[in-house]
Length: 263
Image (cartoon, rainbow, N blue to C red):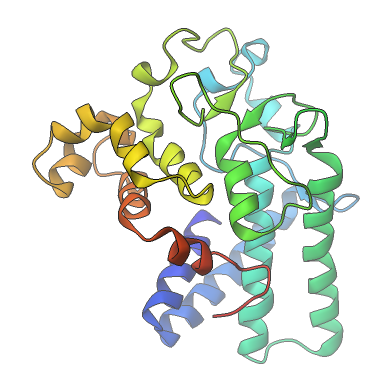
């Protein structure tokens, strides 16, 4: 699903109609696989977080029990599931695939997923959406994607650390480095940059936080290839973070306003 979302944005940006048609065909094949983990009572899917979080980010009492991943409905996974449905819905309409009944059915399913995220995962006492259903934990990526796609029915409070970072996950569990979160996990720069972009934070502030890391590299390619702060060598997230950092905030947010679908 992550590939479909990224490939769709690329095809939309390049106006490559043949590629967009290919993305849709891939999505339609994948859709049947994901429906196998769909709970039809609430239109949410079970399974691991969409970006495959390390065990150190999950509740320690799960004790690396993989069965926990198919018992829980993670926020980021279901935000991406909603966006996946939206892409298939509108791209299929553009290709003339749907009858009116098929359109109505798919549109209602998409809306049910969005409504269910808001009804079942939002924590009103905290002002943000939980990491997974029944969790008390904030997860930056899922909350930021919700806001970016316009699926949130409630305003989102994005907590910050004392040093000004948007934590990838908060509160921290026992296996996290509670006293030194970001110095030990600078690979979350891309999440922090994405959050800061959606929140209209000045790029200068982000640069100041990561100045020492950025200053260690001569150019963007070297930074992506060699920097552990990007989650490992040659990772897409690093490029995404840098693009977010250098891009214009208004254009970034406008390109992400997808609840009213406009290619």
